[in-house]
Image (cartoon, rainbow, N blue to C red; front, side):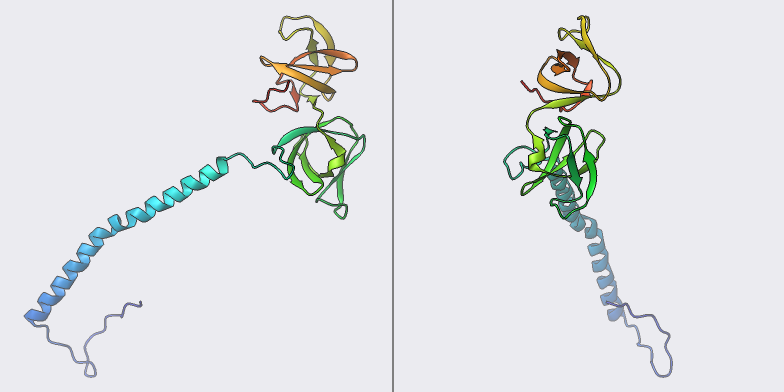
Length: 207
């Protein structure tokens, strides 16, 4: 509601005489308004509390794990590429353009979404796109990262080496325990620290 501006008295707008009674009534009204103003912060408090509750609920919703995909399997999850040539598309269908072509069979990737017979994947470099479900498999593999790694005969730092694996080598993942994982590549099998490769979640214990 627009507050009227104060205007001076003139010949066309005579001033109203202010009597004691009218002054008293105006004073009482002013005090009443002052009382409402004092109560305003307390009246606003429940609204602020509701806002805080809404934010907390939103944060809780964001913290929940992602629901399983249409297949009932968890999202995200690690799989590996089945073929030596896999088209990565910008959308779930052959009508979408090809953004990239993978040429490494067995490379580990994450499935992060599902739509019909298509799977949205993410690779070790963070690249995302869609591939047909026939191009991935549940068999687990890992990708050696960082530097050359020594494949150990036992899950111990002091154990003798079996072979050296360069960064970028793909190895089959067998099992994990006590911070070590057994992998096999090129006819060799041995143990690596679980932070030596891509293809395994920190709290995951495949067997």
